[in-house]
Image 1 (cartoon, helix red, strand yellow):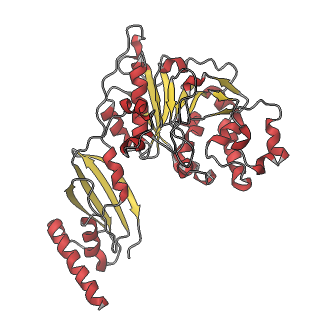
Image 2 (cartoon, helix red, strand yellow):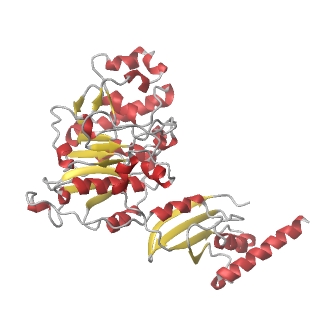
Length: 421
């Protein structure tokens, strides 16, 4: 009975292949890679969920933002990254937070008096995102920097939220290495925020003798950011003995890269991450190493530049109100993100502040190109091709690559690793 079922499936698979890909009815068994080109209206049944990411990969083109009359004329047109008149902003780009990053950039341009003077440094682990940025912000001054996840992967410990364990979340530790030596200062911003003030005000922060500047929250319970293992060990807890440490959020920082490079702060942060692997001294991802190195040595910045916590806690992501006082930057730190809550029709009141900077992706017709890497056995070739044509139902396939193209341009190629049945 089993062999009949197998033969029936094999016959069906072959028919699917003939219907969808007649050009592939015959090919040499030694050929390792075959492709099929099908047009789909996303989403389609049986599709692997990673494909859903791609329908976010085409955003509405932003308006053109021009400098006010009092801005330097040198920043108009093409200028190099080393131009001293530029304001440098670093932000990460990845699939999960891409919509947030686009909104953050949009908000900065919208409220800047000299938007053509802002240079963006995008940290990525997926290089295909550069084309998307260019199509959304055609006049934007930016450069993309590839951050190799393997550089930090072995140093990452488990955290209270999986998103905090992603290698790109640690790219901020390496800005001094990634950016050009001529870039002496940079504003680092998380992807889940919007700026509602002129970014140049943050840029001109006086850091004095300090390496970083950030809004500090000295009323916060500083002890909760480290475990009992940390506070019970005198050699660990003693590092704060001669400091007056205050909590700060590392998602908004002004960084003096010259001092950072001079004092080797990347190595100091990495050292604490190594200690964490064996001693479990904290639970919160990339933040605690910054506190260990810098808390008590931070140039204070007004709280209006990081109205954080709007994403709730790291578990429930409940709604939160603004802190008392003026607002220059709203930050949805925590597990609740405004784009997800808006899409689910369950927004928090402050999510409506984020919404105007959203550039909704275009639900265009996508051309999905699916590649199937065939095993070295000829018996699974027909099955593997049929599986790819059927929309990703894996049977006898070693690896499937999904490539998404819009209007003839490839947006990304993502390998999904599976063992054949």
